[in-house]
Image 1 (cartoon, one colour):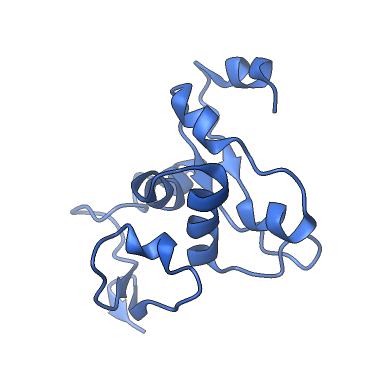
Image 2 (cartoon, rainbow, N blue to C red; image 1 turned 45 degrees about the vertical axis):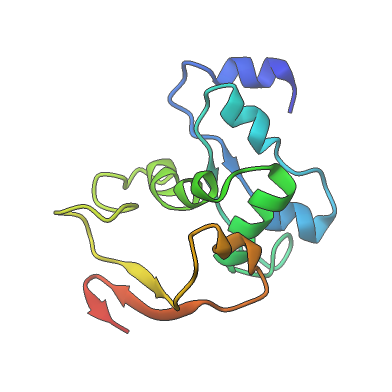
Length: 137
């Protein structure tokens, strides 16, 4: 990604989407997430879950890798994985944040000292429970 690419994205409605686990699996360069955000652009995170480039749908790894390799803060990575991801899919009016009137699909973590602990503990499963459309599964 060049500086010209970043300039072309400014002022557009395009949501840049980074696939850090794809970069990890294929040993290719990571998206310059810090550079995109510092340029005032939004960023979404996804797994690219498929057998050819990322045989994993582990979003905790994606969020952690975005912090470690792309230099995002934990807050930026969580936003990129939730509300910005929903925007990229065209469903941010109904998904992506905990807001009255939106679909109640979320995870509840085990007790953690702060949200900054989520990327720090990338090898741990911190999910306590999962709620899909308001139902505990």
